Image (cartoon, rainbow, N blue to C red; front, side, top):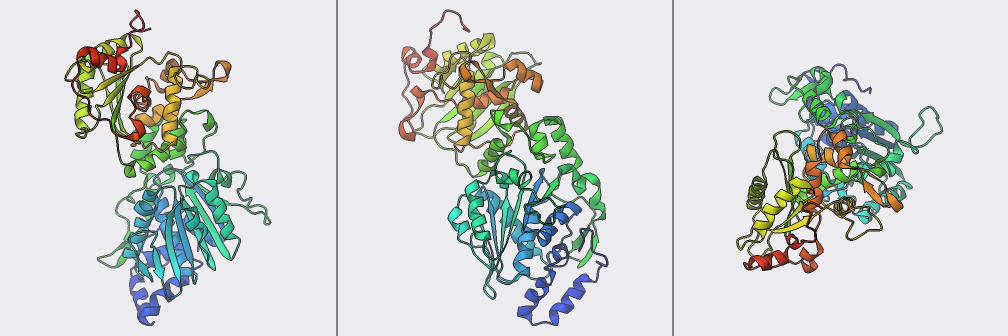
Length: 546
Protein backbone atom coordinates (compact mmCIF):
# COMPACT_ATOMS: atom_id res chain seq x y z
CA UNK A 1 0.00 0.00 0.00
CA UNK A 2 1.30 3.46 -0.84
CA UNK A 3 2.24 6.03 1.78
CA UNK A 4 -0.92 8.01 1.00
CA UNK A 5 -3.94 7.50 3.19
CA UNK A 6 -5.89 4.35 2.30
CA UNK A 7 -9.07 5.06 0.26
CA UNK A 8 -12.37 4.10 1.78
CA UNK A 9 -11.27 4.56 5.37
CA UNK A 10 -14.62 5.54 6.83
CA UNK A 11 -16.75 5.61 9.94
CA UNK A 12 -17.85 1.97 9.55
CA UNK A 13 -14.27 0.65 9.83
CA UNK A 14 -14.65 -0.25 13.51
CA UNK A 15 -17.91 -2.08 12.84
CA UNK A 16 -16.33 -4.04 10.01
CA UNK A 17 -13.41 -5.04 12.20
CA UNK A 18 -15.74 -6.06 15.01
CA UNK A 19 -17.77 -8.17 12.61
CA UNK A 20 -14.69 -9.97 11.32
CA UNK A 21 -13.48 -10.50 14.88
CA UNK A 22 -16.78 -12.06 15.95
CA UNK A 23 -16.70 -14.47 13.04
CA UNK A 24 -13.47 -15.98 14.37
CA UNK A 25 -12.64 -17.86 17.52
CA UNK A 26 -12.06 -15.25 20.30
CA UNK A 27 -8.53 -16.52 21.05
CA UNK A 28 -7.46 -16.72 17.42
CA UNK A 29 -9.24 -13.61 16.14
CA UNK A 30 -6.64 -11.04 17.10
CA UNK A 31 -3.71 -13.08 15.81
CA UNK A 32 -5.44 -13.88 12.51
CA UNK A 33 -6.58 -10.29 11.96
CA UNK A 34 -3.31 -8.60 12.76
CA UNK A 35 -1.27 -11.07 10.71
CA UNK A 36 -3.07 -9.93 7.54
CA UNK A 37 -1.02 -6.74 7.38
CA UNK A 38 2.40 -8.24 6.55
CA UNK A 39 2.54 -6.28 3.29
CA UNK A 40 0.74 -3.25 4.66
CA UNK A 41 2.36 -1.75 7.79
CA UNK A 42 0.65 1.62 7.20
CA UNK A 43 -2.71 -0.15 7.11
CA UNK A 44 -1.70 -1.93 10.33
CA UNK A 45 -1.18 1.47 11.96
CA UNK A 46 -4.61 2.70 10.89
CA UNK A 47 -6.81 -0.35 11.25
CA UNK A 48 -5.09 -2.12 14.16
CA UNK A 49 -3.25 0.54 16.16
CA UNK A 50 -5.78 3.28 15.48
CA UNK A 51 -3.56 6.14 14.31
CA UNK A 52 -2.75 7.53 10.89
CA UNK A 53 0.94 8.17 10.22
CA UNK A 54 1.87 11.39 8.46
CA UNK A 55 3.45 11.05 5.01
CA UNK A 56 7.16 10.86 5.92
CA UNK A 57 6.39 8.78 9.00
CA UNK A 58 4.49 6.43 6.70
CA UNK A 59 7.59 6.17 4.51
CA UNK A 60 9.63 5.14 7.55
CA UNK A 61 7.11 2.53 8.66
CA UNK A 62 6.77 0.96 5.21
CA UNK A 63 10.51 0.77 4.44
CA UNK A 64 11.09 -2.65 6.14
CA UNK A 65 8.58 -4.16 3.70
CA UNK A 66 11.01 -3.47 0.86
CA UNK A 67 14.45 -3.48 2.44
CA UNK A 68 16.15 -5.54 5.14
CA UNK A 69 18.57 -2.77 6.04
CA UNK A 70 17.09 0.69 6.62
CA UNK A 71 18.66 3.83 8.08
CA UNK A 72 16.71 7.00 8.88
CA UNK A 73 18.39 10.30 9.74
CA UNK A 74 16.25 13.18 10.95
CA UNK A 75 15.90 16.29 13.01
CA UNK A 76 14.04 16.37 16.31
CA UNK A 77 10.27 15.98 16.76
CA UNK A 78 9.31 14.06 13.62
CA UNK A 79 7.64 11.08 15.34
CA UNK A 80 10.62 8.69 15.43
CA UNK A 81 9.61 6.93 18.66
CA UNK A 82 6.04 6.32 17.48
CA UNK A 83 7.33 4.98 14.16
CA UNK A 84 9.73 2.60 15.94
CA UNK A 85 7.00 1.32 18.26
CA UNK A 86 4.63 0.80 15.33
CA UNK A 87 7.27 -1.11 13.31
CA UNK A 88 8.00 -3.32 16.33
CA UNK A 89 4.32 -4.22 16.79
CA UNK A 90 3.72 -4.73 13.05
CA UNK A 91 6.66 -7.14 12.77
CA UNK A 92 5.70 -8.96 15.98
CA UNK A 93 2.14 -9.48 14.73
CA UNK A 94 2.94 -10.28 11.10
CA UNK A 95 5.56 -13.03 11.23
CA UNK A 96 5.23 -16.35 13.09
CA UNK A 97 7.75 -16.69 15.90
CA UNK A 98 9.02 -13.16 15.22
CA UNK A 99 11.50 -11.59 17.62
CA UNK A 100 12.05 -7.85 17.79
CA UNK A 101 15.03 -6.42 19.68
CA UNK A 102 14.89 -2.72 20.53
CA UNK A 103 18.11 -1.06 21.62
CA UNK A 104 19.38 2.46 22.27
CA UNK A 105 22.27 4.10 24.09
CA UNK A 106 20.45 4.66 27.40
CA UNK A 107 17.86 2.92 29.53
CA UNK A 108 15.80 6.11 29.48
CA UNK A 109 15.56 5.90 25.69
CA UNK A 110 14.63 2.20 25.72
CA UNK A 111 12.20 2.10 28.66
CA UNK A 112 11.23 5.72 29.21
CA UNK A 113 10.51 6.63 25.60
CA UNK A 114 10.26 3.74 23.11
CA UNK A 115 8.78 1.11 25.42
CA UNK A 116 6.35 3.64 26.83
CA UNK A 117 5.20 4.29 23.25
CA UNK A 118 4.82 0.54 22.61
CA UNK A 119 2.63 0.23 25.70
CA UNK A 120 0.54 3.24 24.67
CA UNK A 121 -0.10 1.81 21.20
CA UNK A 122 -1.00 -1.62 22.62
CA UNK A 123 -3.39 -0.03 25.12
CA UNK A 124 -5.13 2.09 22.43
CA UNK A 125 -5.23 -0.58 19.69
CA UNK A 126 -8.56 -1.09 17.91
CA UNK A 127 -7.83 -4.84 17.69
CA UNK A 128 -6.25 -6.52 20.75
CA UNK A 129 -2.56 -7.22 20.31
CA UNK A 130 -1.82 -10.86 21.23
CA UNK A 131 0.46 -11.73 24.12
CA UNK A 132 1.35 -10.47 27.57
CA UNK A 133 2.71 -6.93 27.86
CA UNK A 134 5.19 -6.25 30.67
CA UNK A 135 6.08 -2.94 32.24
CA UNK A 136 9.79 -3.01 31.35
CA UNK A 137 11.28 -3.58 27.92
CA UNK A 138 13.65 -6.36 29.00
CA UNK A 139 10.57 -8.46 29.91
CA UNK A 140 8.85 -7.20 26.80
CA UNK A 141 5.72 -8.28 24.97
CA UNK A 142 5.48 -12.05 24.56
CA UNK A 143 3.03 -14.41 22.91
CA UNK A 144 3.59 -17.96 24.16
CA UNK A 145 1.27 -19.34 21.47
CA UNK A 146 3.82 -18.85 18.69
CA UNK A 147 6.86 -17.66 20.68
CA UNK A 148 6.81 -14.16 19.21
CA UNK A 149 8.28 -11.40 21.38
CA UNK A 150 9.49 -7.82 21.58
CA UNK A 151 12.33 -7.12 24.02
CA UNK A 152 14.54 -4.13 24.73
CA UNK A 153 18.12 -3.74 25.94
CA UNK A 154 20.49 -0.83 26.25
CA UNK A 155 23.32 -0.85 23.73
CA UNK A 156 25.79 -1.65 26.52
CA UNK A 157 24.47 -5.20 26.77
CA UNK A 158 26.20 -6.77 23.77
CA UNK A 159 25.83 -10.34 25.10
CA UNK A 160 22.05 -10.07 25.40
CA UNK A 161 21.78 -8.56 21.93
CA UNK A 162 24.04 -11.19 20.40
CA UNK A 163 22.17 -14.02 22.13
CA UNK A 164 18.88 -13.53 20.24
CA UNK A 165 17.89 -15.86 17.41
CA UNK A 166 14.69 -16.50 15.48
CA UNK A 167 13.33 -17.41 12.08
CA UNK A 168 12.22 -13.80 11.68
CA UNK A 169 14.39 -11.29 13.52
CA UNK A 170 14.26 -7.48 13.56
CA UNK A 171 16.74 -5.17 15.26
CA UNK A 172 15.50 -1.63 15.91
CA UNK A 173 18.39 0.66 16.89
CA UNK A 174 17.35 4.08 18.19
CA UNK A 175 19.82 6.97 18.60
CA UNK A 176 22.05 4.81 16.40
CA UNK A 177 24.62 7.57 15.95
CA UNK A 178 25.83 6.99 19.51
CA UNK A 179 25.87 3.16 19.48
CA UNK A 180 29.31 1.55 19.61
CA UNK A 181 30.61 -0.47 16.69
CA UNK A 182 30.90 -3.75 18.65
CA UNK A 183 27.10 -3.70 19.07
CA UNK A 184 26.64 -3.52 15.30
CA UNK A 185 29.20 -6.31 14.93
CA UNK A 186 27.13 -8.47 17.31
CA UNK A 187 23.96 -7.69 15.36
CA UNK A 188 25.57 -8.54 12.04
CA UNK A 189 26.69 -11.87 13.44
CA UNK A 190 23.07 -12.73 14.23
CA UNK A 191 21.79 -11.52 10.88
CA UNK A 192 23.85 -14.16 9.10
CA UNK A 193 21.24 -16.82 9.91
CA UNK A 194 17.57 -16.82 8.89
CA UNK A 195 15.40 -13.87 7.92
CA UNK A 196 16.82 -10.82 9.67
CA UNK A 197 16.25 -7.09 9.38
CA UNK A 198 18.09 -4.11 10.88
CA UNK A 199 16.53 -0.67 11.20
CA UNK A 200 18.58 2.35 12.34
CA UNK A 201 17.18 5.75 13.25
CA UNK A 202 18.87 8.75 14.83
CA UNK A 203 19.73 12.40 14.78
CA UNK A 204 23.09 12.81 12.95
CA UNK A 205 25.11 13.60 16.05
CA UNK A 206 28.37 11.96 14.98
CA UNK A 207 30.17 12.00 11.65
CA UNK A 208 31.83 8.62 12.26
CA UNK A 209 30.61 5.07 12.91
CA UNK A 210 28.08 2.64 11.48
CA UNK A 211 25.18 5.10 11.36
CA UNK A 212 27.24 7.70 9.51
CA UNK A 213 28.54 5.04 7.14
CA UNK A 214 24.99 3.79 6.51
CA UNK A 215 24.25 7.13 4.85
CA UNK A 216 27.58 7.33 3.03
CA UNK A 217 29.91 4.43 2.22
CA UNK A 218 27.31 1.75 3.09
CA UNK A 219 24.28 3.46 1.56
CA UNK A 220 22.27 1.48 -0.99
CA UNK A 221 22.52 2.53 -4.63
CA UNK A 222 18.86 2.07 -5.60
CA UNK A 223 19.72 2.41 -9.30
CA UNK A 224 21.76 -0.82 -9.14
CA UNK A 225 19.54 -3.93 -8.74
CA UNK A 226 22.54 -5.97 -7.54
CA UNK A 227 23.67 -3.43 -4.94
CA UNK A 228 23.54 -4.06 -1.21
CA UNK A 229 23.55 -1.58 1.63
CA UNK A 230 21.22 0.53 3.74
CA UNK A 231 18.15 2.08 2.23
CA UNK A 232 18.30 5.64 3.54
CA UNK A 233 15.67 8.21 4.47
CA UNK A 234 16.30 11.82 5.48
CA UNK A 235 13.69 13.98 7.25
CA UNK A 236 14.01 17.64 8.18
CA UNK A 237 12.02 18.80 11.24
CA UNK A 238 10.54 21.52 9.03
CA UNK A 239 8.76 18.78 7.03
CA UNK A 240 6.61 18.03 10.09
CA UNK A 241 2.87 18.08 9.30
CA UNK A 242 2.45 20.74 11.97
CA UNK A 243 4.80 23.00 9.97
CA UNK A 244 3.55 22.21 6.46
CA UNK A 245 -0.15 22.07 7.36
CA UNK A 246 -0.47 18.39 6.41
CA UNK A 247 -2.07 17.72 9.81
CA UNK A 248 -5.33 19.19 8.46
CA UNK A 249 -5.64 16.27 6.00
CA UNK A 250 -4.92 13.51 8.52
CA UNK A 251 -7.56 11.39 10.22
CA UNK A 252 -7.73 10.56 13.91
CA UNK A 253 -9.75 7.90 15.71
CA UNK A 254 -12.55 9.27 17.86
CA UNK A 255 -12.71 6.69 20.65
CA UNK A 256 -16.03 7.92 22.04
CA UNK A 257 -17.85 7.94 18.70
CA UNK A 258 -15.86 4.92 17.44
CA UNK A 259 -15.24 6.48 14.07
CA UNK A 260 -12.55 8.30 12.09
CA UNK A 261 -12.63 12.05 11.70
CA UNK A 262 -10.40 14.74 10.26
CA UNK A 263 -7.93 16.08 12.81
CA UNK A 264 -9.07 19.20 14.61
CA UNK A 265 -5.63 20.25 15.90
CA UNK A 266 -1.92 19.65 15.11
CA UNK A 267 -0.31 16.33 15.98
CA UNK A 268 0.94 16.44 19.59
CA UNK A 269 4.69 16.19 20.09
CA UNK A 270 5.76 17.01 16.53
CA UNK A 271 7.77 20.06 15.49
CA UNK A 272 5.72 23.18 14.88
CA UNK A 273 6.59 26.51 13.21
CA UNK A 274 7.23 28.22 16.55
CA UNK A 275 9.78 25.61 17.67
CA UNK A 276 11.62 25.67 14.33
CA UNK A 277 11.74 29.48 14.32
CA UNK A 278 12.94 29.50 17.93
CA UNK A 279 15.85 27.16 17.17
CA UNK A 280 16.74 29.09 14.01
CA UNK A 281 16.89 32.29 16.05
CA UNK A 282 18.84 30.75 18.95
CA UNK A 283 21.36 28.76 16.93
CA UNK A 284 21.50 30.30 13.44
CA UNK A 285 21.08 28.46 10.11
CA UNK A 286 24.75 27.39 9.83
CA UNK A 287 25.16 26.33 13.45
CA UNK A 288 25.98 22.62 13.85
CA UNK A 289 23.22 22.44 16.47
CA UNK A 290 20.62 23.66 13.96
CA UNK A 291 21.96 21.47 11.16
CA UNK A 292 21.91 18.34 13.34
CA UNK A 293 18.77 18.85 15.42
CA UNK A 294 16.48 20.59 12.95
CA UNK A 295 17.80 20.03 9.43
CA UNK A 296 18.87 16.46 10.23
CA UNK A 297 22.22 16.83 8.46
CA UNK A 298 25.60 15.39 9.34
CA UNK A 299 28.14 18.09 10.15
CA UNK A 300 31.63 17.80 8.69
CA UNK A 301 34.83 18.70 10.56
CA UNK A 302 33.41 17.72 13.96
CA UNK A 303 36.85 16.43 14.91
CA UNK A 304 38.12 20.00 15.37
CA UNK A 305 35.34 20.99 17.75
CA UNK A 306 36.23 20.99 21.40
CA UNK A 307 32.71 19.71 22.16
CA UNK A 308 31.19 17.72 19.32
CA UNK A 309 27.42 17.77 18.94
CA UNK A 310 27.29 14.04 19.66
CA UNK A 311 29.13 14.51 22.94
CA UNK A 312 26.66 17.20 24.01
CA UNK A 313 23.67 15.09 22.98
CA UNK A 314 24.91 12.06 24.92
CA UNK A 315 25.38 14.27 28.01
CA UNK A 316 21.75 15.40 27.65
CA UNK A 317 20.55 11.81 27.42
CA UNK A 318 22.36 10.86 30.63
CA UNK A 319 21.16 13.83 32.66
CA UNK A 320 17.74 12.60 33.93
CA UNK A 321 19.15 9.30 35.24
CA UNK A 322 22.41 10.66 36.69
CA UNK A 323 22.55 11.08 40.47
CA UNK A 324 24.37 14.12 41.84
CA UNK A 325 26.91 12.98 44.43
CA UNK A 326 29.75 14.53 46.37
CA UNK A 327 30.99 18.05 46.83
CA UNK A 328 29.36 21.07 45.19
CA UNK A 329 31.57 22.81 42.61
CA UNK A 330 30.59 26.17 41.12
CA UNK A 331 32.20 27.74 38.07
CA UNK A 332 32.12 31.56 38.19
CA UNK A 333 32.85 33.55 35.03
CA UNK A 334 32.46 37.25 35.91
CA UNK A 335 31.51 40.07 33.54
CA UNK A 336 31.22 43.84 33.75
CA UNK A 337 28.68 45.79 35.75
CA UNK A 338 26.90 47.48 32.83
CA UNK A 339 23.52 46.37 31.50
CA UNK A 340 24.89 45.81 28.00
CA UNK A 341 27.43 43.29 26.75
CA UNK A 342 28.30 40.08 28.53
CA UNK A 343 26.69 38.27 31.45
CA UNK A 344 28.08 36.71 34.62
CA UNK A 345 27.98 32.93 34.16
CA UNK A 346 27.47 30.46 37.01
CA UNK A 347 27.44 26.66 36.81
CA UNK A 348 26.76 24.35 39.78
CA UNK A 349 27.91 20.71 39.61
CA UNK A 350 27.98 17.66 41.86
CA UNK A 351 29.93 14.64 40.68
CA UNK A 352 28.91 13.74 37.15
CA UNK A 353 25.89 16.05 36.99
CA UNK A 354 25.55 19.74 36.25
CA UNK A 355 22.75 20.91 38.52
CA UNK A 356 22.02 24.45 37.45
CA UNK A 357 23.18 27.21 35.10
CA UNK A 358 22.64 30.90 35.66
CA UNK A 359 23.40 33.95 33.52
CA UNK A 360 23.09 37.35 35.21
CA UNK A 361 23.65 40.78 33.70
CA UNK A 362 25.05 43.84 35.40
CA UNK A 363 26.24 42.34 38.70
CA UNK A 364 28.71 44.22 40.85
CA UNK A 365 31.44 42.27 42.62
CA UNK A 366 29.26 42.22 45.74
CA UNK A 367 26.30 41.15 43.62
CA UNK A 368 28.38 38.28 42.30
CA UNK A 369 28.96 37.11 45.88
CA UNK A 370 25.23 37.36 46.66
CA UNK A 371 24.39 35.27 43.59
CA UNK A 372 26.90 32.63 44.64
CA UNK A 373 25.43 32.40 48.14
CA UNK A 374 21.93 32.09 46.68
CA UNK A 375 23.11 29.27 44.41
CA UNK A 376 24.73 27.49 47.37
CA UNK A 377 21.47 27.82 49.32
CA UNK A 378 19.62 26.26 46.38
CA UNK A 379 21.82 23.14 46.60
CA UNK A 380 22.46 22.59 50.34
CA UNK A 381 25.24 20.31 51.48
CA UNK A 382 24.89 17.26 53.72
CA UNK A 383 25.98 17.49 57.36
CA UNK A 384 29.39 15.86 56.72
CA UNK A 385 30.01 17.33 53.30
CA UNK A 386 32.94 19.64 52.62
CA UNK A 387 32.33 23.29 51.86
CA UNK A 388 31.45 24.03 48.23
CA UNK A 389 34.28 25.13 45.97
CA UNK A 390 33.95 28.22 43.78
CA UNK A 391 36.33 28.15 40.81
CA UNK A 392 36.78 31.74 39.65
CA UNK A 393 38.44 33.08 36.52
CA UNK A 394 40.17 36.20 37.87
CA UNK A 395 41.63 37.43 34.56
CA UNK A 396 41.29 41.15 33.84
CA UNK A 397 40.17 44.06 35.94
CA UNK A 398 36.61 42.74 36.39
CA UNK A 399 37.87 39.34 37.49
CA UNK A 400 40.27 40.92 39.96
CA UNK A 401 37.52 43.00 41.63
CA UNK A 402 35.30 39.93 42.02
CA UNK A 403 38.26 37.92 43.31
CA UNK A 404 38.98 40.47 46.04
CA UNK A 405 35.39 40.34 47.32
CA UNK A 406 35.18 36.54 47.20
CA UNK A 407 38.62 36.18 48.80
CA UNK A 408 37.53 38.30 51.74
CA UNK A 409 34.44 36.12 52.26
CA UNK A 410 36.39 32.84 51.87
CA UNK A 411 38.90 34.03 54.48
CA UNK A 412 36.23 34.85 57.06
CA UNK A 413 35.22 32.55 59.92
CA UNK A 414 31.69 32.23 58.52
CA UNK A 415 32.78 31.38 54.99
CA UNK A 416 30.22 29.49 52.92
CA UNK A 417 32.66 28.29 50.29
CA UNK A 418 36.30 27.63 49.47
CA UNK A 419 37.72 29.81 46.71
CA UNK A 420 39.90 28.40 43.91
CA UNK A 421 41.35 31.09 41.73
CA UNK A 422 42.50 30.43 38.17
CA UNK A 423 44.13 32.76 35.65
CA UNK A 424 43.45 31.26 32.29
CA UNK A 425 46.34 33.00 30.51
CA UNK A 426 48.88 31.06 32.59
CA UNK A 427 50.72 27.99 31.40
CA UNK A 428 48.92 24.62 31.68
CA UNK A 429 49.29 22.88 35.04
CA UNK A 430 48.91 19.17 34.26
CA UNK A 431 49.47 18.49 30.55
CA UNK A 432 51.83 21.14 29.20
CA UNK A 433 52.79 18.82 26.37
CA UNK A 434 49.17 18.82 25.07
CA UNK A 435 47.82 22.33 25.71
CA UNK A 436 49.20 25.79 25.08
CA UNK A 437 47.59 27.65 28.00
CA UNK A 438 45.60 26.95 31.14
CA UNK A 439 42.41 28.06 29.32
CA UNK A 440 43.02 25.38 26.71
CA UNK A 441 43.71 22.78 29.41
CA UNK A 442 40.52 23.68 31.31
CA UNK A 443 38.53 23.18 28.09
CA UNK A 444 40.19 19.81 27.45
CA UNK A 445 39.49 18.77 31.04
CA UNK A 446 35.78 19.62 30.61
CA UNK A 447 35.70 17.59 27.41
CA UNK A 448 37.24 14.64 29.24
CA UNK A 449 34.61 15.05 31.99
CA UNK A 450 31.84 14.71 29.39
CA UNK A 451 33.53 11.74 27.74
CA UNK A 452 33.75 9.99 31.11
CA UNK A 453 30.01 10.23 31.75
CA UNK A 454 29.26 13.86 32.61
CA UNK A 455 25.60 14.89 32.32
CA UNK A 456 24.25 18.25 31.15
CA UNK A 457 20.74 19.71 31.36
CA UNK A 458 19.35 21.07 28.09
CA UNK A 459 20.16 24.76 27.82
CA UNK A 460 20.15 26.44 24.42
CA UNK A 461 22.69 29.11 25.37
CA UNK A 462 25.16 26.61 26.84
CA UNK A 463 24.78 24.34 23.82
CA UNK A 464 25.54 27.22 21.46
CA UNK A 465 28.57 28.20 23.55
CA UNK A 466 29.98 24.67 23.57
CA UNK A 467 29.42 24.19 19.86
CA UNK A 468 31.46 27.32 19.11
CA UNK A 469 34.65 26.20 20.89
CA UNK A 470 37.25 24.87 18.50
CA UNK A 471 40.75 23.47 18.99
CA UNK A 472 43.47 24.46 16.55
CA UNK A 473 47.15 23.56 16.41
CA UNK A 474 49.26 25.96 18.48
CA UNK A 475 53.01 26.14 18.90
CA UNK A 476 54.86 22.83 19.09
CA UNK A 477 51.69 21.01 18.02
CA UNK A 478 49.86 21.75 21.26
CA UNK A 479 46.09 22.36 21.26
CA UNK A 480 44.89 25.94 21.35
CA UNK A 481 41.27 27.02 21.84
CA UNK A 482 39.88 29.74 19.59
CA UNK A 483 40.26 33.13 21.23
CA UNK A 484 37.66 35.08 23.18
CA UNK A 485 37.57 37.64 20.35
CA UNK A 486 36.82 34.88 17.82
CA UNK A 487 34.13 33.51 20.11
CA UNK A 488 32.51 36.95 20.37
CA UNK A 489 32.52 37.23 16.60
CA UNK A 490 30.88 33.82 16.26
CA UNK A 491 28.30 34.27 19.04
CA UNK A 492 27.88 38.03 19.15
CA UNK A 493 28.81 37.84 22.85
CA UNK A 494 31.16 36.12 25.26
CA UNK A 495 30.56 32.37 25.99
CA UNK A 496 29.65 33.07 29.62
CA UNK A 497 27.82 29.82 30.42
CA UNK A 498 30.33 27.76 28.45
CA UNK A 499 33.22 29.23 30.41
CA UNK A 500 31.37 28.78 33.72
CA UNK A 501 30.69 25.13 32.88
CA UNK A 502 34.34 24.45 32.08
CA UNK A 503 35.45 26.12 35.30
CA UNK A 504 33.02 23.98 37.32
CA UNK A 505 34.79 20.86 36.01
CA UNK A 506 38.26 22.09 37.01
CA UNK A 507 39.18 20.60 40.38
CA UNK A 508 42.48 21.84 41.84
CA UNK A 509 44.33 18.80 43.15
CA UNK A 510 44.77 20.37 46.59
CA UNK A 511 40.97 20.43 47.00
CA UNK A 512 40.10 16.95 45.76
CA UNK A 513 38.94 14.39 48.34
CA UNK A 514 40.77 11.10 48.48
CA UNK A 515 39.17 8.09 46.77
CA UNK A 516 35.95 9.99 46.14
CA UNK A 517 35.10 10.17 49.85
CA UNK A 518 33.44 13.27 51.17
CA UNK A 519 35.75 15.40 53.26
CA UNK A 520 34.37 16.57 56.60
CA UNK A 521 33.22 20.16 56.82
CA UNK A 522 36.16 22.15 58.18
CA UNK A 523 35.88 23.95 61.48
CA UNK A 524 35.97 27.72 61.52
CA UNK A 525 39.50 28.95 60.84
CA UNK A 526 41.36 32.14 61.47
CA UNK A 527 41.81 34.42 58.50
CA UNK A 528 45.42 33.32 58.11
CA UNK A 529 44.49 29.62 58.20
CA UNK A 530 41.70 30.06 55.66
CA UNK A 531 43.92 32.01 53.30
CA UNK A 532 46.58 29.32 53.55
CA UNK A 533 43.97 26.60 52.85
CA UNK A 534 42.47 28.04 49.69
CA UNK A 535 43.70 29.07 46.30
CA UNK A 536 43.04 32.64 47.40
CA UNK A 537 46.35 32.50 49.26
CA UNK A 538 48.31 32.74 46.04
CA UNK A 539 50.00 36.15 46.10
CA UNK A 540 52.77 35.66 43.60
CA UNK A 541 52.47 38.94 41.73
CA UNK A 542 52.26 42.59 42.56
CA UNK A 543 50.25 43.19 39.38
CA UNK A 544 46.63 42.37 40.31
CA UNK A 545 45.64 40.82 36.96
CA UNK A 546 48.92 39.41 35.72
